[in-house]
Every structure is written in structure tokens, then in C-alpha cells.
Amino acid sequence: MISKEEYNNWLELKDNIFWNHFCEDNLEKDGYWDISDVSSFTAINRDLLKIEIKINNKSFFNGSFDELIDKYFSEEGEILNSKNESSIYGANNLPDNWDTFFKNEEFNKRDKVLVTTKTSENFSVNGELKISGDFNIKKFGLIVLSTDEMGYGVDFGDYVLGFRYEDENVGCEFPGGVGNLEAPSFA
Image (cartoon, rainbow, N blue to C red):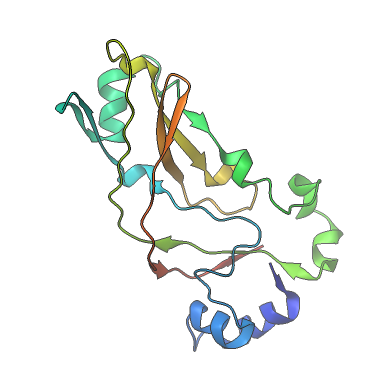
């Protein structure tokens, strides 16, 4: 969240400065690390996801998310054991009446503007889970979040945070770094 004055300053400067430089020079914050007081996450874009499932060091599956669905979940159309965590990431610092917040005069009277930014980075992550008995792909799932369900008004797509088998969750450890910071959206 930034003040309306800071937002108006951005509007005056945006054609001559990158967002991160504006954050550093005008807000005294790093646009990548410090502008996350409402919510932030690091995950893999589902549309770019490549999945490899190995059982006892043998490849069980290697392909895209859509290929996994087509091969093992075409009847259901989705991976039923997936866990959607969108509400957890969308629950921070928002007014109780968020659904109607932008539709009334209160929005125009408030003193803060919500900034949403996205960075693009390349990740290669993995996780390991030991199971007893035979592997059943129907017990496999992904830990996901959908930005359109987070309630911030900007849809960047669906993301994968990790995977699960039965009720055991494995979150992926994402490497640190600084990606290309895209232009911000405001609400």
C-alpha cells in the first residue's frame, strides 16, 4: 500500500523511471523486497510448470501440468487432491468488505492505493517425500494458489507452491534472487 500522494508522484514520473527506481528514490524501499506489506509469494507459474515424478529413481511421469492432467486426471479434469491456499495469501490487511470496496465512494476517499507487482524468474525446485506401499497417482496433488481468488483485483494466473501426497504437504524451497520487476498495477 502506498499513499495517494506517492501514487500521484508515480503518475508524474512513470514515463521517465522504472518502478524499482521510483521505490528506491521516492519511497526509500526496494520495490522487489520491501513492498510486500499486504501479501507476497514465490511460486511457479502453472502454465510454465514442468513436473517430473520419480519412484525409486525411475521416472513415473515427466511433462507439463496439462500433460499430467490429460494422462492421469482426464476424467476429473483436475487434480482432486490439490490444496488451494489462495485465501491464506489473500487474507492479509484487507478490509472486511473487500468484495464491494472498489464499488463505493469509500474507495475514492481512502488514503492508500494498493500496488500489485510481479517479477519473472526461472526456478528449478524439487521436493522429496517417502511413502509406504505402492504409489497411487490419484493421491498426488499440488499446493496451488490462484491470483484471481486472492481478492486484490489483479489476475496474474495460477501458481504452484509445492506438492502433496495424501495429506502430507511438501513445500518447495525457492532460491533467492531478483527477477525482472514488471510494471505495477494499482487499485
